[in-house]
Image (spheres, rainbow, N blue to C red):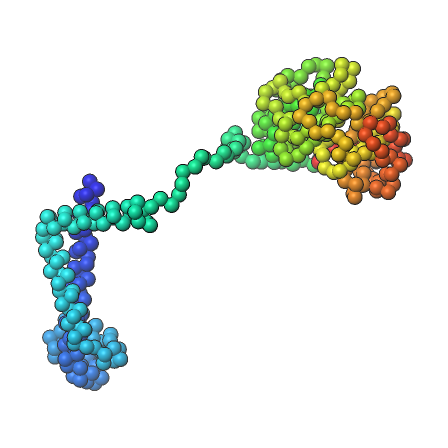
Amino acid sequence: QWLEHRIEVLVRRSQYRLKKIEHRLEVLDGYLIAYLNIDEVIRIVRFEDDPKAKLIERFKLSEVQADAILNLRLKALSKLEEVEIKAEHDRLSKERRGLKELLKSDDLQWERISEEVRATRERYSKKTALGRRRTTFADAPEIDVDLDAALVEKEPITIILSDKGWVRALKGHQDDLSRLDFKQGDSLRYAVKAQTTDKLILFATNGRFFTLEANQLPGGRGHGEPVRLMVDLEQNQDFAACFVHDPERRLLVASTGGYGFVVPESEVVASTRKGKQVLNVAADEEARVCVPVDGDHVATVGENRKMLVFPLSEVNEMTRGKGTILQRFKDGALIDVRVFHKKEGLTWLDAAGRTFTLGWSDLREWVGARAQAGKTVPKGFPRSNKFGPAFR
């Protein structure tokens, strides 16, 4: 079928070329007549009312020839040379004879096809620049693509988690949550702005991290569903943090006993409903803090309202364990932790919900080394002993 197609292409190409040659030969014949009778042609063009008809009548020309002569500029007409016209005429006549013979003979057509195929093979052989391989074989690159996320349409949502552990996803990023309806005796705990392609991370008081796909959460109609149906969390445990996963971020996790460490957030993602144990806690303690690491210093505060500030470099980075002591307590427990930049100062929300920042020069009284007891919190620090929301 391919060879028959090549024959058809050859025949049509030859017929097209033959028509072009015949038209050109007709024009050349007209040029030759004009060259041999240049003075008469100029006179007719200049003085006759209908030079085209006069040229046809006077020299027995065709309309094609007459049009070709009339379209010539005088400058070109004066440069016509009989030798060049005859040379081109002879060359095209020879080509025309060859094309006519080709179109009449099947043997000549197959011979021409063979020559073309052979020429193509030689042109693109491995010995030529065109045919030589210009690429190399190599191992395929490793491309990490989350196909599940790629197939989910990205849309903004607001994830709601209540005090009693009911979760739902509202469409859009909601700022006014005052009209949210909850079951009797329940209320809002976390409201997280996310996208349907995100992963939701839950940090439990037993030190485990749980992962939920945002697109699989129940819709905003009704009160949602109990999150304990989605993860295996003991009844005596609760959630200490809820946030959208950022694989490039690091987290600081700590227990009520004052122990903690830094962990890459990519290491806390759980693949099963059982979650992933990251922070090991003693029987009489619980996981209390999970905050993003964005800064170079750490501020800790306990139930005894003692605050301590020390360099982040003193905190170990681990993937699992108990960690090292961040702040030492004789009584009470660790309440909150904040990582901040020294040049920007320590920020918290006061009792009225206003942002308050204490510069480094005002923080020197609380600056020390990790594992110290700290000093009483600054004047105006919230009675809740918390810095405020860690994730924004």
